[in-house]
Image (tube, rainbow, N blue to C red):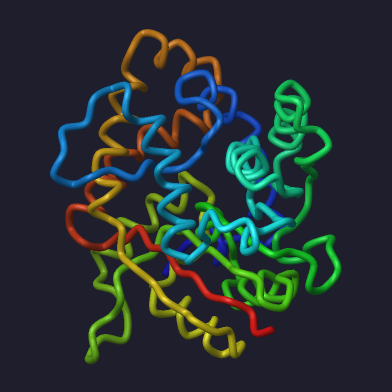
Length: 298
């Protein structure tokens, strides 16, 4: 697939990701708040405008539930890494929920600075801290975290095997890894690649959102299994996120959204123009919203 990763080196990709989020994070927080990820919806329900932020919290809770993390105090994580932390919404939520120490990493200096300010403002500076770091070379020792959390950051990773290996490396023995990410559909038994029109669609999204080549959910499962991780399981949550992108588009075309968008820079505007392609990708079954979880052996 012709993608960002095939046209530029990893450094250029990282710079593009950092600049994209440096420019767009303020807009997102202004319109949607501090959770920079999809919401989780009941496919049968009608969604009200006020439900979208609640749906983002549901995404966190449903991810924990799927991974088998309960409210049993004896089994709650005490140390958490948030890989691709945005402005720290997940970290602060998890720190509050579990009383855990959370460390978040992002390529965006603007995000890291804002996340630390928000943690201080919420009285969580002793529990949640954020820094600029590469998810493929995490600045942590082996086996440090009870919960390794990656909420919609995997799609930015140019080397999926290296990414997964780092998640496993920093997980403590017995620790849980949660990956929630955009994937392309699994290939059929007779297929060697996606169809040309599918590649073209994904490539247009890659160029706007600074994504390298996509992979499938089954690719992630195979990578985790190759590392002898336990209880590997995955699910397609595409139907549960279906209302999200139409809601983002509607919010972008309010007066508040439009004026904020125009102030946020060309990269953010390019991203906004590609949003209908995300809807098209989901509707045509090319894009899958996946959760993959596993546990590191004791």
